Picture 1 (cartoon, rainbow, N blue to C red):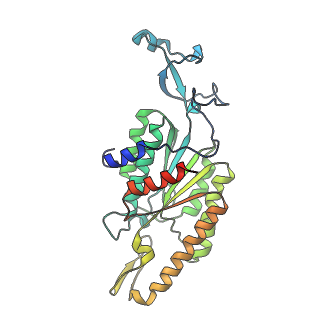
Picture 2 (spheres, rainbow, N blue to C red):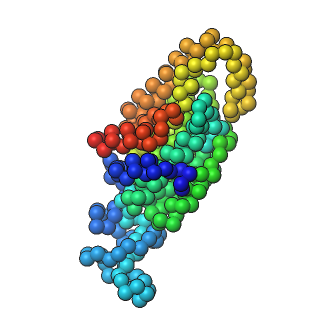
Length: 300
């Protein structure tokens, strides 16, 4: 966990709570009453008994050992169910500076895992490239969080990007209304960039159709949009291995325009679909980007 989080990040996160703006299934006992309370069968954790709790939920074995009343807490008693969905395709290994897009995404995923679990909410993890590489449903159990950190830390950039297909597949697997957090560079595998933008948002809208709240953290390397290369440069496609040598000044304007049009289309389509779009540039420290976003979100 220490390799994903530092003291400054933790201090930033401690000042805020990430809460879903829309109603999600399951509310914490004592804070909200869940319409599903008493029907969950998946144990999450223990907490101390408070007046008003049902006697049937008291664990008498724990009482016999500690002489204190504890009740069993189930998944549907959590305040929030969140899925962190992280892209680890080959394009995410790109870096023009000190940190790659994937390393930045992992720091962000680890920070959000800490923030959500700190609120005693349920957090799950999905990783993908050309297919789903890992998927675990949200849980609020403290011991489970360490396994998520470990999985995030072990992620390596691998495989092609096929977010259009995979995001639809993930959406089909998530049945309960949740907070969906997608972390990706949003690069597609189509030569038609504008059609790719529309199809990408269409896959994100699949989550909205199922009544999830959706946040999209777009991880950007500054050089991708600036294309500020000076000399003749060899470019290698990170996913196909195709190579091309060009004089950057000859294509800079075209690349910049394509980039701007592509992400402007995604941003606008997300806005229309009520999907929250959050661009994050890897040159900005993760704690500064998070602070800026959480301050903005807390005012909504």
